Amino acid sequence: MNTEVKTLRAQFRRLQKQISNAGLISHGYVQDRGPGAGGPHYQWSRKENKKTVSVALSEEQYAEMKLAIENWRQLQQTLKSLQQVSRALIFRTTPDTTRRNPLSDRVLGTN
Image (cartoon, rainbow, N blue to C red; front, top):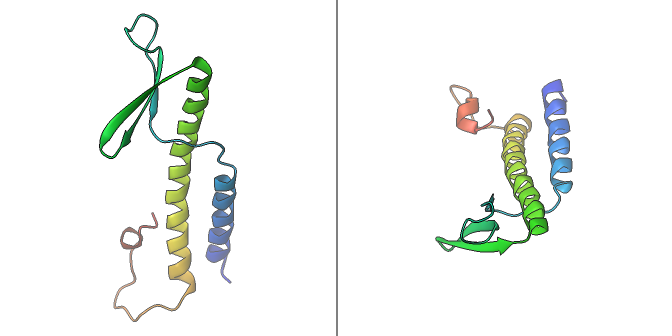
């Protein structure tokens, strides 16, 4: 096994570990609207079935939801990287068809 494949497999394992340590997750976004905004002080909004749904939050819920949304965004980035490494491993470790030119990283989505 060449060093590139070993490096990719190590990177794959590292990304898997990041996913398993993700913590609480949620999509959407939170706002601290400040006092006197004429509505709830803290708010969580998200899209459901093409409609925006908003929920008033306590200060504690706001803090937890903010962290969960940050975790969600990081998880999305980790999944994107995991896909790229997976494709690189597949195309470097399995037999390929006969091609005139090798496939570029852009075509494989590995960059």
